[in-house]
Image (tube, rainbow, N blue to C red; front, side, top):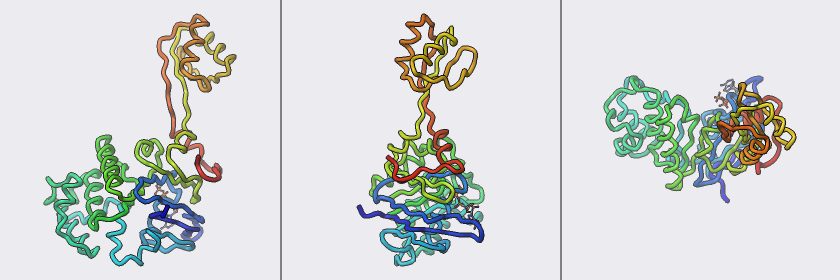
Amino acid sequence: MKPMLRAEGLTKRYGPVLAVSNVSFAVRSGAITGFLGPNGAGKSTTMRLFLGLDRASGGSAHIDGKPIHEWPVPARKIGAVLDTQCAHPSRRAIDSVRWAARLAGVKDDQAEVLLDRVGLSAVAGKRAGRFSLGMRQRLALAIALVGNPEVVMLDEPMNGLDPEGIAWMKGLLRQFRDQGRTVFVSSHLLAEMEDLVDDLVVIAQSKIVGAGAAQAFIQRYQTQTVSVQCDNPQALGAAITSAGGRLVSLADAQRLQITGLEPDAVGRLAQTTGVAIYELREERSLQKAFSMATAEKAEIKGEVG
Ligand SMILES: Nc1ncnc2c1ncn2[C@@H]1O[C@H](COP(=O)(O)OP(=O)(O)OP(=O)(O)O)[C@@H](O)[C@H]1O
């Protein structure tokens, strides 16, 4: 596989701060790769280094085999949104897109099409200064697309979007992938990425702590609990622990949370113990396990999966 993005030994220091430390990873062409890590982990800095917006202290960040400045028209290779404030507040949306196209050295005749693509046709003539955060995200995306790029790189694109906006953004990123583009998107929330990404690159405290298929990572960090509401938690709790289950907490007087047993096993134990169940459900938690894994001093070695 020829990677579309490749970081090798990438390092960035800001004075005493090591923002990115000897980072190496590869991003597959034609897939959506999530760049996941807690706040301050080094995601934005890594993206800036790929885009040539900052100079690396060491190592390399290549797009399709070479640094961005070696591509004659970088906007055709990669389009990025690192900041939603990229349009001038007093400029009309349509003019911002045209202006960005001219700056990038590509034709500016697609501005209407791009605004339509991001759902901003109705406000094409409005000034960006009046736009909501969601509208600014859309405008920034239209600007990133002026060169019809092969790679789309987005820093925390779901931030500040409402559920409808998040669903829209995910749909658009899937469309990009279906068109054969490479999508590289950062987030600090694993749950937000779960149903979107094919692959994950995970960074914590400026170092890569895992990379590979998203599914393998999700399975590894998914915790499953069974939550039960019943008429006799003490009796059921005792039966569960003697059957090898673990009581995570007694959420309230009548509710037990259990790990280590499947829901049907819990149901059968209740039946044999003569406990009446009012409610039994399976709960999954992804973010908690991920947060613990990337917390201070945590180290996950090697490939995921
Ligand atoms: N220009 C800068 N000068 C000094 N320190 C910086 C600079 N840019 C980033 N840093 C530091 O580098 C580290 C990594 O920051 P970075 O913004 O890359 O993280 P991040 O994973 O994108 O987090 P966030 O989601 O909070 O933006 C942080 O400690 C940050 O304070």
